[in-house]
Length: 258
Image 1 (cartoon, rainbow, N blue to C red):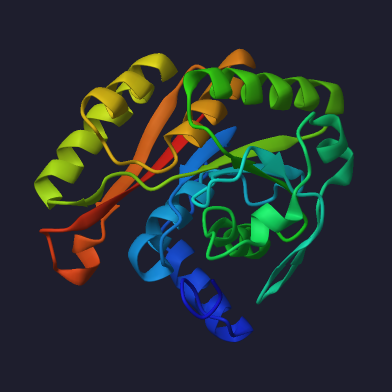
Image 2: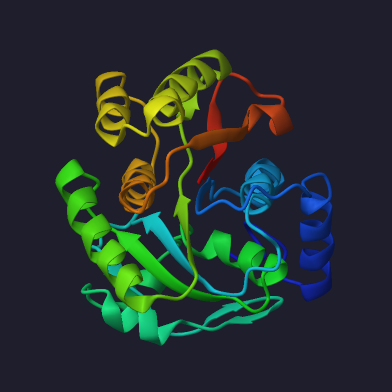
């Protein structure tokens, strides 16, 4: 995605990330966030707002959960990931504790962007952090339960600092009015009561075209089981806010859980 979704040049990318983060300097020490995965000109500021909810001194491990747009089954990566501003080391110790298959081919197949787009934010903001990328296949409540149990158990055994990033855009190619109305309606199930089942119900009954609701539900479920009690909507925008086209927009939300 370098050169398409974000700059491929190191200095250009650093300048862009510096500009995106400049307005968000008040961390809330979140345990997990939701960050979008579109091109940075559209969703980068919302992503920066999400990552700014973490203490910038954090140097532990990020479990990054993204949806598979290519139809792969749930899997993890256990190798370093390259960005234009440097490598991000994989946390092979934590990866070994998660009982999911390693599939590096799935991570790099085609134009999969859900995980990659998060990585420059992590490398820039948290240069000492490591990663365990998780690609989620089926986005069902049963798969949320399975994956959240496996990751949650691994984190408990690991006993070192871990944060979780869920990668998701929200409504796709609908009007600005419909996107904002539907997306906030779905998100309200999380900000009100951290109710993943209700979040899924609203997504499905209102046919909301969020592409990463499974990773969002997984992140919420893991952290809720570990004592999280609040979810905050930090920011929301659409592609129309940048393009000026409000007839066919994609929605982006920054959420923080603690």
